[in-house]
Length: 122
Image (cartoon, rainbow, N blue to C red; front, side, top):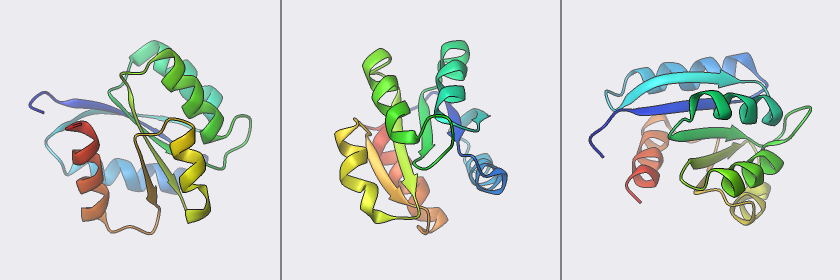
C-alpha cells in the first residue's frame, strides 16, 4: 500500500488512545489519526471522515466495539477494523463481528504495526 492511511482510534481510555496515536505517528504510512471514545461516537466520526482503518477497543460504554464493528462492516465493508482487547476471550466474537484482525493490548509495538500492515495489504 503506497498511499497514506487515515486511522480512527476508538477506546474509552485516553491513555490507550494516546499510546496508539504515538505509535502510529512513528510510521510514515499513517496519515491523519482521529479519535473516538465509544462505538457510537466512532460511527459518527466514520460518517464524517471515512478512515481507511479503525483500531477498536472491545469494552466501552454507550456502544461496545463488537456492536460498532458489526455496524461498520455492514455499512462500510471497505474500512478495515482491527479489534483490540486486554482479554483474548473476545477473539472469536471479534472475528464473528467482521473484524479484519484481533490483537491483544499486550502485544509489542512492532507486532501492532506488523498486524496493521498485514490487514492493510489484504
